[in-house]
Length: 103
Image 1 (cartoon, rainbow, N blue to C red):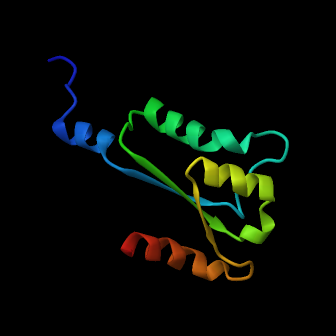
Image 2 (cartoon, rainbow, N blue to C red):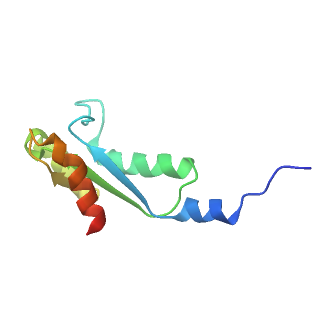
């Protein structure tokens, strides 16, 4: 007996599309410690290092009014879609995520 070779299912999974849902209210960009222009690159690199090399989409959900304008601009410039969910409507956040999937 030797090591098992990767199966076709593993190969298919590693190249499948990956969607990242980011709650930007609960996990904000750290001020002064993180370049928002690098977030998409860092997420994609971490996924690739874990063996996920397929296409990646990143969607942030949260109150856009609470995100500093330079961060909004950086996220938009790097392909991260920010879906505005007004503060106080936390219970609608999962619904917003599922509506995006269904669209």
